[in-house]
Image (cartoon, rainbow, N blue to C red):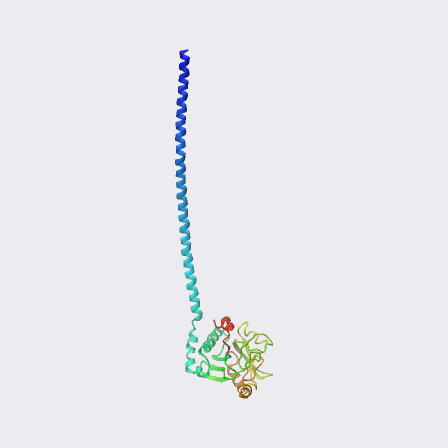
Length: 287
């Protein structure tokens, strides 16, 4: 009997010992998981921090790259502007004629003269111009003024300074409205290259080829030519306050028309000017 009791006591004690040991192991294992979790959390935070650092670095590099690109674009833009605005050596060499020929005393402005040189130079580079004679019709002025200038840039002399008519639908004393449309009876602004001379309904005349799309490119279709006309004379000025008007052609006095045409025909530059903001801002030959 006593032996049986002892065995049961040993079993109970053994069981208690096993339970105690198991509880300790579980307790140790439970304490280890939070530590492991914290380590993982720290590691995760470290990785996130590193990731953020990399993103920041990448953004910083991108920002620097964009900044460099922006600076480069600004630099290119400024260079382009300088190239466009800087006159060529040919233009620079001819600009001095404005003062030596006293063109301001005849009523031609320096700005208009330099506009004319700039456009002519561009046409020279395309081999459309074969003469260094330039003709300027300054339609910012009244038709009562001698607003046509024919200048020989080689011999440095003014060949003609005379009256010139504008289209009847462009205005009376002054021209204010312009068109490139057929049958508009208006003058067309811009640069022309002179063509061949011929005898037509207006007598000895000269063909004109408009060089600027949207402004005078329909000159041939419109039969815009330079010719002499009886209504271009001082009698008209005295009687009505302005010279007669054309159907869009730059007409001159018949007494000088033949000689004038022969001096500028076949490959010289004609520039019809007016301070129209639309023309000045859009002309490819003035930029």
